[in-house]
Image (cartoon, rainbow, N blue to C red; front, side, top):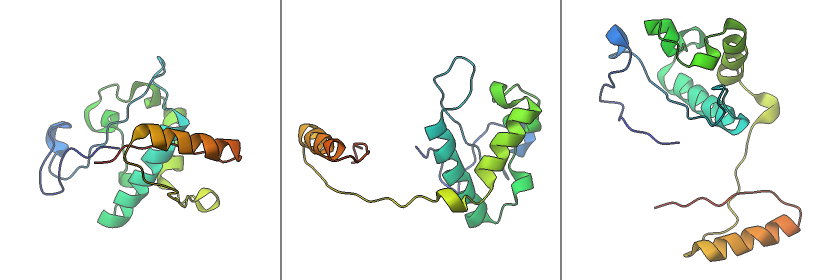
Amino acid sequence: MFRCIPDNEIAYAAANQNADTIHIEVCYKRQSGEFEEKSIAALGELVRSLMKKHAIPAGKVVRHYDLTGKLCPAYYVDEARWNALHERITSVQKSSELYRVQVGAFSSRANAEAYMQKLKKAGFDGFVVQVK
């Protein structure tokens, strides 16, 4: 996830709804425009965090399409798809809450990748993230 605009600035993306709207873009790889599961999980985590921080009710979480009529996000202009996604990203996910554990910090990517291979051999899944 990347944050481009601080809370005290305005992003111009939705006609007359810029001053009171938080805009989130989701990248996708599928030609259909459907979001990957990993993206949906991250989106849900972000949306629920913003809802809590700014006291935003679920009913105020809308698509670009709802504000402008633009077919965006195109795959989720379909009401059934949008309703399913909306439920996933705005509902508290009690049964699938995530707890993150960092198991190492390395000065080289090669060392991080080597350690990840050891973890995988031991039956654990994970990923390497570069931070600055």
